Length: 77
Image (tube, rainbow, N blue to C red; front, side, top):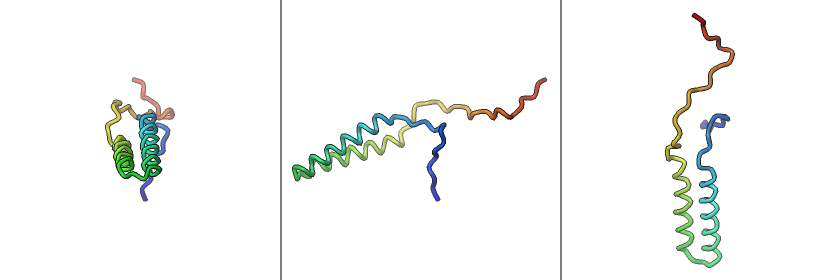
């Protein structure tokens, strides 16, 4: 079974932008439904797909070294 990585080290990048895009898409979809027009709904779908595509963009952060184990002893020379 697929389990997403929920470790605290996982950085959530661009969360604010994704939330804004989701809210914009939801408002556009609501307006399209209210006005009974199809074009705002299609624009909302495109906006939401663009927000989903942000997940696959590189984070822009350099990969950090994995945290060292505090119990691991470093040999002294």
